[in-house]
Amino acid sequence: MDVWSLGIMTIEMIDGIPPYFNEDPLRALYLIATKGKPEVMDQQKLSPELVKFLDKCLEVNVEKRASAADLLQHAFLKKAGDLKSLKQNILSAREAVEEWLEDDEV
Image (tube, rainbow, N blue to C red; front, side):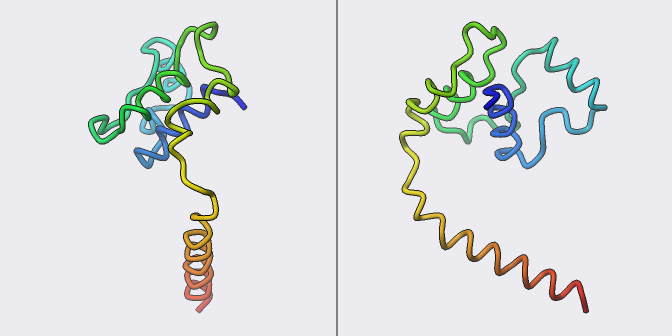
């Protein structure tokens, strides 16, 4: 996996939109290249572990950027709960989408 993309995707999940969303895609790439790591909109809400995880993913210097193997050992991922805990959330989301699709057909 591309570690930089993981960091960008993480920011998108936090903020609800990708960095530089309102910019033309080429301008967004330029901003990332010239300004470096995009910032989260409301950074004070992030845990210290998540901030460090993003810093490792979004290190501009490729030689210093963490590898996927390094990230799997990161404190942020070590705090993750058991994946079985997601089952109810997935089922609820699936049910909500199915209801939405049924309502949309009417």
